[in-house]
Image 1 (cartoon, rainbow, N blue to C red):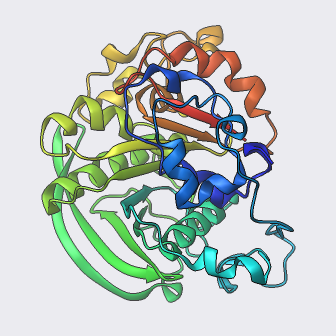
Image 2: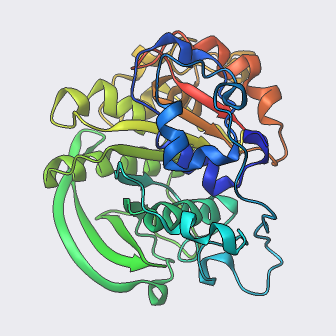
Length: 359
């Protein structure tokens, strides 16, 4: 069973355990079997002297999970309300699933959606499911989410004001409140800017400029980590909405105080790639003119109709240490990312170019 057959939760959780290395062999496409989710096999995969081209060949173990029941929007009970894990592993594997990982990490997800409090599509489902999977393995997981005016507050337990601080946007420093609560057993940090961002009756489609709001949110999350002294092992960003965060991290905050984290980008839908102007990108404090190249944030798609425009998703790909692409949407990820968006980028990026997997 290859990477394409793995549960979405398992696929993403596996990539959190990939070694932080500059070894150029990781520039090849990763194909990892289901059993690699478990610690004993991860130790073998983490050896940079072994070939990552086909883990089925380099690690001679058989998959241990079987008969996976995939979550569906048509389920009577949403998966985040079910007993975890959401698949039937069989009684002979129950002890193995309940084991905690030996190398525990601190993971912060930065996302525009989370089920059930701010769910629009599959993005919210995956973020919640992945987080619960990692928590069940013993990892510390936090989710950073905009404090939408429409958010389902009744679904948030123990909501309280955590921190007040300032974050930069468009020439000034805006006041921000960070709230903390618990959703489905996961610690959630809600970012609330003291302006019009994220106000409205729905998650998307407000009267504010969404692209600029998510650029502000991306920087405000990094600013919160810096102000509070948080140094997670992994910052996991999702979709174009947080595609600007890796640029901000490597070109600004990594040279300030955030030294430890590594970046993972998960792409859920390639149809939306966060097209923006250099002037808009500059509003978050970066010099947008520096990213107007194919090596950084100019996308093949924007070249075709507007070469002055940037793509936040493209920038996120270039600046992330690892990439997960979830297929099944309206565009085939393999066709889109090979070769246009990823293969051209394998020689670039902060740590020898991003490592990536296509489901």
